[in-house]
Amino acid sequence: MTTPLFKVGDKVRVKPGVKDPDFPDMPLGGWTGTVTEIMEHEGQINCVFKLDDRTLAGIHPIYKRRSEIDGLDFRFMGLGQEDIELDDGVPAPIERPTAIVPRPLAMDDQDDRVRMALGLTHDDPLPEVNHKTLLDYHGYLAKNLSFPFKSRYDKPVGWSRRIEMPLTVTGLLRPDECEIDEQYGIIATGRDAEEPVDFPLAEIEAKGSNPSCRMVRDYSYWFHNWR
Image 1 (cartoon, helix red, strand yellow):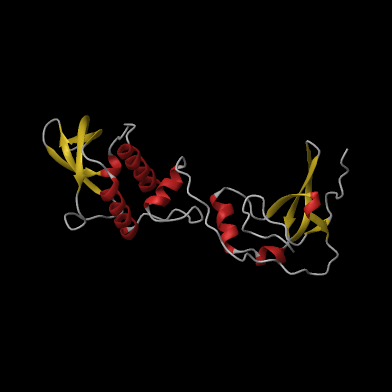
Image 2 (cartoon, helix red, strand yellow; image 1 turned 135 degrees about the vertical axis):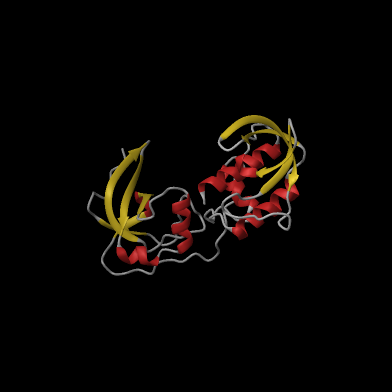
């Protein structure tokens, strides 16, 4: 049976050469903190420790950004007890990354598909909707959407009434043909059951399984949540 080497409240330090288990390009040597939890699983003892102010001040900005993107609290670290030692109070150098390697995009992750459309890496936060990012997204969709494709939208009728109607999307209006802004976003063109129409791309229901419908859903997700 493995015996815990540390207890809650111990001040510990990461040994030289230890890498973050989630981000292998991020060295942790010299990080210090106070043990808050001891966990044992299948003979492995892990220690969770809260990083001290000195360590937090020295953490690389990319590490903080990755933690925020992945929903992790960068103020805490969990490692196997073999990777840490008691902190003797003598400050050790905090190891720095020598080469940042952007993590690959995952195409089954909607946020990553949006990042790809905007030319970003997994380490980049999703940007806010503005004129520039809308133009970037327009350029991506103009190159990658296959027209026509089927959809549905709510068509205005009179001053206050709307009716759901089938829609065939046939293209995107160019930036020089319309105003692309944060209110309406990218404008598309097509035809419903009655007439040719122009409409905000983010307002249609693209429920099909083809790649174009998925790209429109990804764009709409970003447009409605990052304005």
